[in-house]
Image (cartoon, rainbow, N blue to C red; front, side):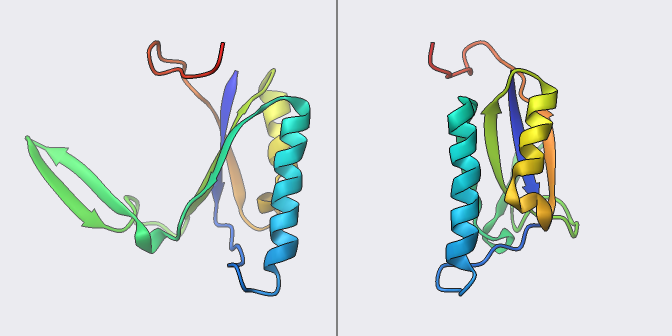
Length: 121
C-alpha cells in the first residue's frame, strides 16, 4: 500500500548555509534506505510557504489568494510517497526520516483511484 509522509514544521537549511551539506547527506541517506527497501516512489521538498498560491471555486467563481490555505503555524515542507507492506513499515520509516527530529511527519494511506494510479506494473 502506498503511504504519503507529509513533513511539517521542519526548518531546513538553504544551499550556502554551513549546515546544508550535512542536512542534505542525511536526507539522501534516508531516501537511499527507502530505495534499498524497495519502497521509494517519490520525494519532493516544497519551496517556502510564502511562495504558495491557493485556488478555490465557490458558486462558479474562482478565488486566488497568495499564501497557503490554512491559517496555521504548521507548515507543510514536503512529502515522500512510499509503497510499504503495511502501516507499521511506513511508521518505522517516518521515524527514520531526519526531518522528524525537528518537525513532525504525518503518515497517511493513499487512496488508489482507477485511472489516477500511475504506478508501474
